[in-house]
Length: 380
Image 1 (spheres, rainbow, N blue to C red):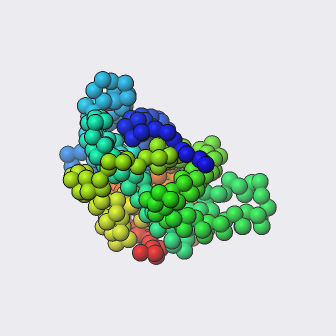
Image 2 (image 1 turned 90 degrees about the vertical axis):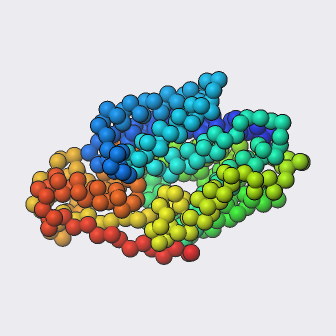
Image 3 (image 1 turned 180 degrees about the vertical axis):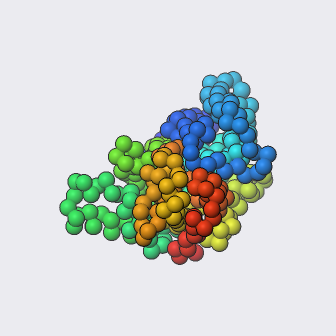
């Protein structure tokens, strides 16, 4: 019988903090241009006060990296963890594209760990934080699965993920692999639920570990996928999954009622269980609803006239494709090429992108057309 990890909860929380910080350091290294601000893709500040010179982005970014390192090795980890989360908020305010799904999830988990004082004399306290962290990860899998229940997932996002296999398979074999995508939403929803049930938890751990390892291989950045940080997050998720769910972790003296006494429990419940249901109506952002690689993200179609296209810089022209006497820009490829991550699917980002293209092509609105594409139908 497989017993899993033989670590107590305080040890798991300490290791989880290290995994999250190392994952952040590795991820921002792979998406360096996203944080330094050195790229053509426009910055999208949330508020007017968040507009700042380029050197401000550099200074805050290096302070953020320093805080992460200090939280790893300093004798005052919670202090530097607090500074890192504060700097993260400011940097995201200066460009909403930085609110990538991996950055969002890691930061939320670190925020929860910030409230844990490290004491091991009260099982109810540290077990409460641990259970909330478990709930966060289970929610991510559950809502990721729900968002995949749409007509375009299999032939769209899923086909794009398994595309590297086409080079080593016949057309018939590859078609079969693509059709396996029909069961993927069910696997994610099942895993999200099964992680909450101790008797079947081992199935979810094994299943999601295999999926993450396969994604780590298929999304290898040098094969063609340019979302390097998202690729790396699959490896991080395996470690996080095992630390939170593998092995015997039930505490003899833990009372579930203790959760109701923890202030952190209620906002987590809202953000990871209630708010994602508002994603379909655009009232809650895609990436904060675990709606990624599902084909259901908010998206637009941007078309430029021949005149507007000729005035664009060469660095942007390469992402345009000639189509019906006009040019259509692949903004996803543009963002992936420049900062190795997809742009945040939000109206603010699309409006800023439109304004930027307009300024580069002569400020003639009739030469550029941007249309918000309809979302596919969710299950909920």
